Length: 451
Image 1: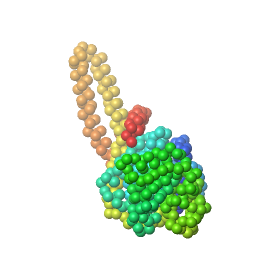
Image 2 (image 1 turned 60 degrees about the vertical axis):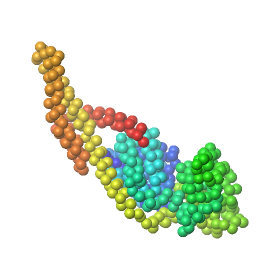
Image 3 (image 1 turned 90 degrees about the vertical axis):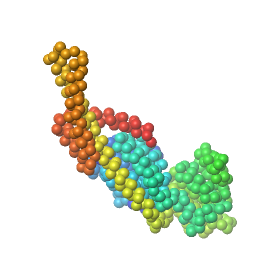
Image 4 (image 1 turned 45 degrees about the horizontal axis):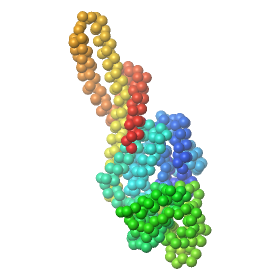
């Protein structure tokens, strides 16, 4: 295993850099394709969220891998390599595994403990599988990260260490008032109908706003979100969908606006907000969860506006208290990293063990054939019994060393046992490689059905 991750996140870079380095889906696809086309990566997956971009790869050379992945991130993000480099972080092998497992548990999120990252990791794996850029290593890694994240949320109280980014943003808008009391009788506008916007709408409904207006460029997605919000057994909130062009008409009637689209430019200008403030006496609350930003930051200079964006959320979360459950999650992550490393090291020797047993079977077949030539009078029963006896002897001789070598290979520093086994038994490297390829194809196919 030569796992490498190169990335940039809210912990390493200012928002001004992150919003320029965001990756649209088509750009992610091109990044993955280019990663495999360039050496030394043999597998690749990209995790892109509103506050992180990370490129994972299986590489055969560390320094060349770092240089290549860093260059590719700069090329596809649109931020020059010289400007991006100071904010990049690099993790290798077990440290890379530890990083992804921590991310999956919400330990590296802007709001510690948030669970939305699990869906984003699942999407990253699905894209890698669809493009066939995620092979055995990254399939195993990302699937295990999902299991570790779910384990952390089910076995600990990490959820209590923080809330979703939407809830945290609403708490900042409420400024010390209980969110449900602050939201009562308010009218909200949600701009966008994607996953984060859907979460925002559901959260607003849960905390008790009276009405939610969904503004989106695609009417079908907005209508679907309205249907979910108003279906029988839901919160009973009033909800309706409008075209994005009608946003200016909705702003004067809104008390709170939450925006999280995938747009590359501003969705809500300071001028549009200023026009919506004319004649109103109540404050307009604006929450921008998009990266790059949807709402012009200049709105914070307007009177009658309370504005919260990703940058202000990052500053607020830096001082948030950490729950005791965080330590328990960190222990889970450490244990899971050790288990994953041991499993990968043990799997590395499996093709060699299979090749050894195949060679032994060939030797048995050859010797039995030679015996038949020397003793032509053997009947079928005698021949079968001799064959079974020879095979039992070989199996018993190989059983203990092959079981033990798998155990040793699973321990730190155990990667060299496969090389030793190949050298001791003079195994054909091409035979071992053929077993590895067959194992990879089988695991890759199975992996795609396990997510």
